Length: 152
Image (tube, rainbow, N blue to C red; front, side, top):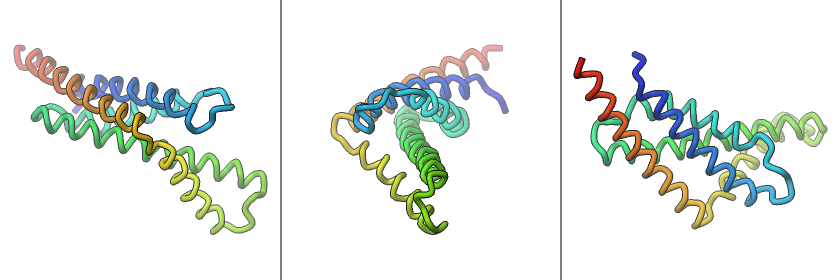
């Protein structure tokens, strides 16, 4: 069932994911401009916030924060997987892989490389604070929207 909390959670997670992507990119590729990286990660955050976070938020505050942290991790995994596939296709078209199994191994190496760059103390603290804020704001929005819906 469509409820208004789903797009609210999607927008909250998308904004947080786009901000995290803009902070992540200088660590990953300091010599390249950001391009559409933050936009793509924000769109992944929108989809995960709508589908995953929006359906699970609102029961209790600590549970909303925990689910928001799970949504942030899921967004990071989805971003690493999608950009890993992108890199494999780029390297495949440049004929850097001789066999299909080499491309599969290259995917896991690339995705793991994207994730390992994120293991930096300041960046993880920023992700944790962002998950906390998303969880609290989503919980408050759920309470407000449910109160409004039940008042009818």
